[in-house]
Length: 244
Image (cartoon, rainbow, N blue to C red; front, side, top):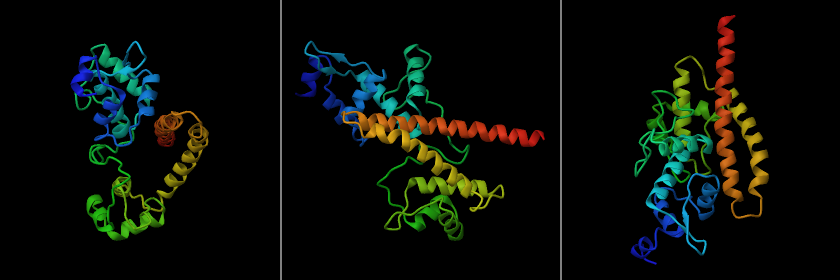
């Protein structure tokens, strides 16, 4: 059915929505869209025969949700609160991205912007490029690799996450922390990842179509909560150390 024909019948099919979203969100699937609907993020209309019909507003809301997940790594609860604010008129929803953007989690102020470092699994960054982008020398990068903080791929290339890690480590080194000191953060992160995997793994192995999407959402939710918990615990511990 053509786009004109779809508009005449009151909206787009889920396949057409998928085609619109894929250029910006290559990993989007029909089961992911259905999952977001089941979580109350979108409410497409239904035809008498039960088929979903998506409006332009539905597509904008989907872009909002997917952008917030990708760029700010926000859990659905926070994104849903943001959408409720939009629905009540407190904020507005733009065609390309939220006019009132969700709060960021885990960003080093003044150093790392999610717009500059969007994780891309297909990016291949050479060692020389990483040194230039992170503004570090080869010795410091070698120390990060030895400490297990930055890991090159099988072909020796790095990704955007490696750049973010190197930038953050450099910022921390300006306070006197060396790569060996940051090893403790890596060990803690590995333990947290193991706990999250124990919870999300069985969900991903479910037989229904949306199992993988639900598992990915659990990972996002727990990762965001873990980051918040870690930040609060560090703040509390540091405050206690200073007071004493």
